[in-house]
Image (cartoon, rainbow over all chains, first blue to last red; front, top):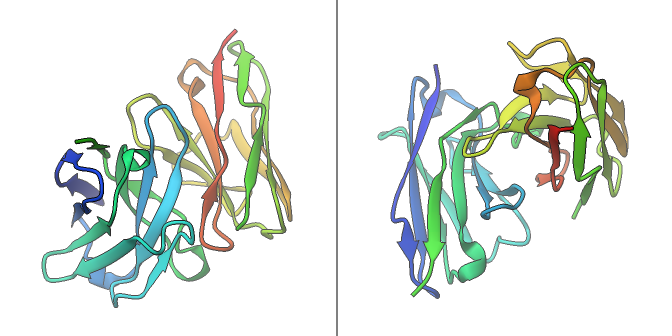
Length: 121
Length: 106
């Protein structure tokens, strides 16, 4: 059974960088699939942030691309999110998830439980 | 960017009702559409992919149809466990979610 767990600070100051890590168990990232980040502001809908292949190839939401970096560490079976220059609008529950393969890279079948990140001074 | 528009935003229904949710894409996405169910405080759950394929373990009362720009999710007979929020997602070009449809008790 694939399991994902987000970790990182729950509070980030405006203009700083939000950093989250997703630890994967039950499946080796090196074996395939894209690995995704998705967020959900409190009381609102879902927003796809981007994803990464085990080789390091990435796709990013064009609206966030200038501020986002997703990286992978196959030795630790983890992937990470960095979102720069955050504002209150970046306050959300952040989910890591397993995407698909090929043309279905953003089709998610396994999700982490989500972690709330609040941007506030 | 491809925009996804769901309707209605809220739907009040009773157990046993047939429920239909519509999702429209701003441009053709072929059949690259998924439906998810989300309950409060929980991560979404994949129900349907490629517009009409049921994910493993999903009850057969859920079905999806459509292609191009118009899609529907149908619940043939609403069960107590189905009261939740439903999202469509296109994964043809990057990814975009609809704004969600909340199904609540009438």
